[in-house]
Image: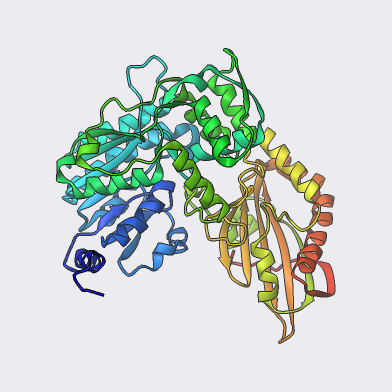
Length: 524
């Protein structure tokens, strides 16, 4: 092919960006929804990227972690020293952090402190610019929510610093895995008849995730955007009622019948969303509070400075549904948050942890090798279920939802593949070591902390041992009572779960399942 072909020219330009001393671009919140999609776009455009997050383990499992032009650094907006290290030598900073998931109701103060820390660190590091993605909504509207006030407050704090800060204000982001899209999808698919609040008639201007990424990179490449604030949105201004209809048409399902009522407050709406969708009330409540005011662009200057083809709501929903069906959901709202190992998982010392560590373990000997069992271990949960007593698991999920937990609604990002930090029903993947070990942290509501560990150990060339171990650190008397009330169910479920997993893998059970008491280990 001709070396002057546009494709070759673009490739050479991208290689030049990454190799001729260009300052790296810092992307914060690297495992979050937007940042996780922005990073591969920057890399494919030839930029050197420094990805900042609180967990190197989580970042290390992302596909872009193997790119030669990526550098991963641990950083926390509440730790100014870590920000200084992360920013050293960087030119542009993408500020894509929001504390709503990790801090729940205390997110506003955390975001305020984090923005001040970042503005100071950027000035000390002599960065060239900051690009921030905030929320769309008029601050003087009587129904302005605390969430939108916080998003705009962060932008103001960053713009008051010494480094020029570009603020992009967006309404609903349509893309597979976004919290807004998941709420829309689950409500439309699970509720053929809806009793809806008045806000379903409120106008909004959604934007496709691909257009959001286009504007973020465009602001990086166009100096005229520095220090300015822009509203960004797609080509359609619609009501939320219209969005439900558009989704139903694109998904090939009947349009939901909606009966608006004046008494369903944002708080009640968030509780309903919590029951029906994977998004918990703590996240749904701030989002729904922002639905009571128009979220449409008041100006469109960005379209002249960063021109791109804007994707309609219908097209954005089509693309998102295609990604879901093909299991190509690159990032998800549930990805965000710190990966926290309970201290007792490292020390294994009940005196140190301040209480008794309770355990229930079963083991079985199997004819086969670890790889024969691993595909079924990695597929656990979600639509696959738990290989036994699925009705009891569903009942536990319902109990969790009604107690304010996440329940089983989150499901899995992929039906067959797991990575560190993934949400899996009401679990979080802490460690995955194919084909030998999977460690899950319970994120359900309970009076204590719990882990579920599955390990596979080869015995010889034709046999291996599989173990399932549940560990629980109770909080007070309530935690101890909780464990012993459920203990008979644990014995029933775990022993049959092992049998079902082995049977699903097509392996032959040689011996067991048998109860076992694990030795104290210093390794989680």
